Image (cartoon, rainbow, N blue to C red; front, side, top):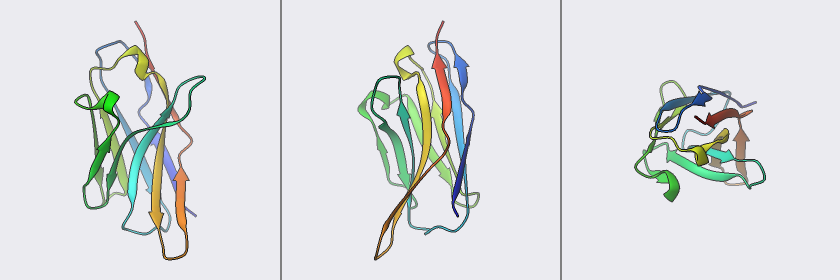
Length: 119
């Protein structure tokens, strides 16, 4: 069983910062992608940022220059540093672990953490 537990969400004013963390536990393939998605009310879930186990990153255009994804493979933890937050960043943020074997693709999700940007 693989479990992902997020922390760090909350309420912040526009222009503020938050740092999300996601701890992964269980058995999983070490060559993987850890990332963050978000879903705002009435919208589809979208990729925010991801990082492979060898450090290749991918960002949504809307967060480039403001958000930074990082990971500590020794702790099986992925982080999302969010700076210069905007009202439109308000959403539930989900941690994701993705990896492939010869036979199957695996996708695991955290329970989500609310981020609200409001004055």
